[in-house]
Length: 96
Ligand SMILES: [Zn+2]
Image (tube, rainbow, N blue to C red):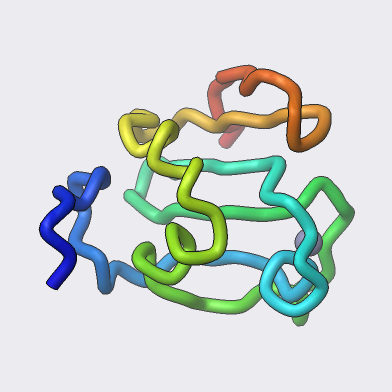
């Protein structure tokens, strides 16, 4: 066990969505949403088709990009997006 506290309120094995660009092509995560239903999404800035989505655990996301812990307190119904890896996150509300 890692002694560092897990930053998310959800457990490390919580299923969330990422895309194959992040997982397979090492694209940076530029869009994170925490949906009203509690579902997390960690996507690159590209457009996505349904079969681009991949389900992983929150722990896996942190192993890909540990800076995601900065967004662990994103509230239900909020999203964060960034222009690129070096820019700040802009927080907004997910449209229904
Ligand atoms: Zn993608």
